[in-house]
Image (cartoon, rainbow, N blue to C red):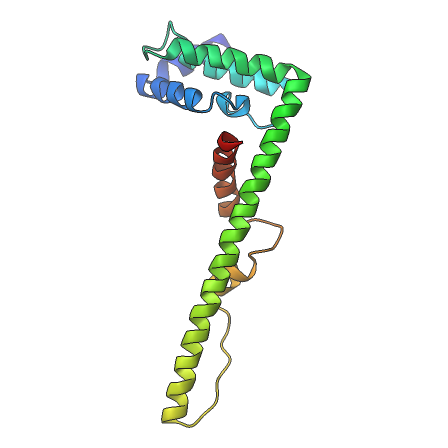
Length: 178
């Protein structure tokens, strides 16, 4: 286990360490993000996340001027997640952030759907005018395009993998605002 850890640390570049310090300081108010953990993780998984991250930014290993601060943020994040009452508070914050991110995504998808319908209506009217002018014929129904199918599912409860990735990023951003 220590051999594996030593190998990991030797492969971790100074750049990675510096990026981790900056990320930790940016997300200092979100202990889950500080330790790169999810709210549903076990205490053992959180402790493992702490060990990995704290070793990466330890002031003895990292030359970043704010490494000591980042290391302190990691220790505080672990302490907060080990205390059940505080952990539940942060779980609630992350759930609220996820709900906000879902609302924003659904709103964006509804807007895309409305925009698509408006464009389709204009195209249909143009085609109908052209058809009437040239052939005197009526409208012909077409198959749904992939774009229309995506927009039609804007209010569905399930999200695609791409949507889940967007939600993860937006949840982190929403957690910073809460």
